[in-house]
Amino acid sequence: MFQTRIIKKQLHFKQPAGTSRGVYTTRNVWYILLTDTDNRYYGVGECAPLPALSCDDVPNYDELLAIVCKNFEKTGEIDREALLPYPSILFGLETALLHFRACSLQFWHTPFSKGKAGIPINGLIWMGSFDEMYRRIEEKMQKGFRCIKLKIGAIDFEKELELLAHIRRHFTPEQIELRVDANGAFTPTDALDKLQRLSEFHLHSIEQPIRAGQWKEMSALCASAPFPIALDEELIGINQRSRKIELLETIRPQYIILKPSLHGGISGSEEWMELAAERGIGSWITSALESNIGLNAIAQWCATLQPTLPQGLGTGLLFTDNINYPLHIEGDCLWFHPEEQEPDLLQRLGQPILTTQT
Image (cartoon, rainbow, N blue to C red; front, side, top):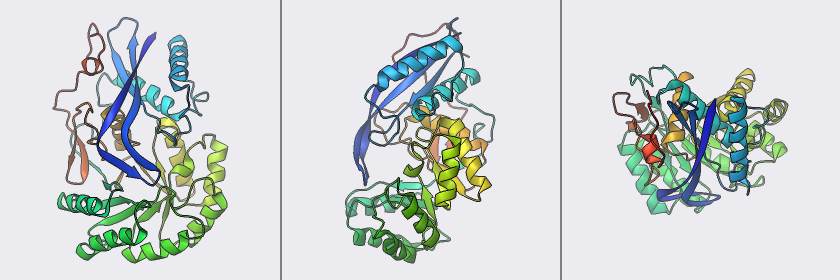
């Protein structure tokens, strides 16, 4: 049987992470430490709900997580149906169990986990002042990223267009793919006009142009937009299979973006991808500001899908107090280096050393 411990930590961003919803400077995470009763093996999973965004960002999160872990200790099984409203907890428990069973950070055997192939990723440009964003764009281009994603909607729209124009003056769409993420910053009345102006820069896609929950308006935008729309926040809280089908068939987006911590854990994200593919809707995977513990779990899973589109997995260097993992960004790919020594998670999390761990 299993035993669980919950370790709560606060992570600190190296630089403020700005979106149209606000600016993150710190981040609370809960780690589930899973051991067997013989105290010989362990697995660690990360629960990381985003404040004011995750559907399970609730005041009694600590109490709820403790109850879920105690129930898991009793049964040894994950009650996925009961955890549908709590995707960050489901993700943490799923990945703790994957780590436990693998006895390694290599959850699956893939070219990525063996260090033979990288996962293509986008270069993320957080919101900031015009000068800050300009500098970050220059850095990403110099590092060789072939896909750049800009967070927009916080500074003057004309200034944001100027940043996009700067990139296009130096690189064609064939050389650099451009994505933008509005995080719902546009209104239904001005969105189409803004999309028309953005289309001048030959963008790959825009994420969540208007606030989630406006299915009729979002459907109209997806049908008339001059370039593809990808849904992100729109998927949050849509946990039942029937509701997922209803959303996809009502809005008919060109893409959906899966964050396991927000969208149903790994199992729920796989269901989203299956339903989307059946309807000709593309998808890609991104992290949701997890530490390297959660990021590695997402990357290991992502690699099993053999992605060709750039994924949103370049967030491992965001925190001053992250745990060093054998994850590295090289060029425009995320790589896993199995030859590097794995971190002593028990020591880093301040937990007693177990008898053995293979």
